[in-house]
Length: 264
Image (cartoon, rainbow, N blue to C red):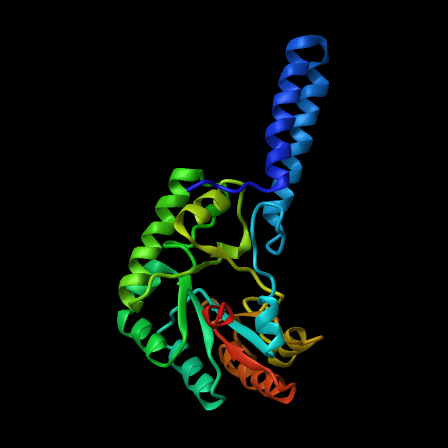
């Protein structure tokens, strides 16, 4: 398939050609040429460090307009499944008749296949959060990105019965090579409208306030069932945040749906 490139990527390609031409035409200006390239790569790096940025490619930070018009929001839960926390999260979601999207790590899912099947059985969706959740994910080239994503596609698709349709980068960090890989694989990058920093903050009330501040239809909210911080009582914070968050969503007359459902 033909890959669609963003204006920033097209500008980068043209910029490199122009700088190279300048270098050939006026070798004495090599310092300016190098500085121009460094500046361009700094812009690319900054775009990759901003999880909600769309300069490197299509990136969901909110649900589509049609889903927002229906009063829908999306709860997204990263890094699992976790054998101790995820079942309790599923119970909390059941009590509020809420649906969520679980961005699972392929290698983690392979360790708990029955838990993945239970997520789907209860009406939730499993999406791609890479196979290994590598710390150097944003430094990988095209071939390694393709390998990492495809391995997770295969793992999660086999366990859930349906290939993932969405991808979330580890920590939200990426590089210009990712978007072409996503396009070829038919995956949509999804970040978030708001995250509660629940991997670092064990104060459930504070996390809930961040997630519900300005809450409105179309929001995509991020929590973690694995790697979650714990409260002063040693409870994974998501288990105390979810009841507060789901109550606020209900009070606002909003409906938690999966990202897939929002496509309808």
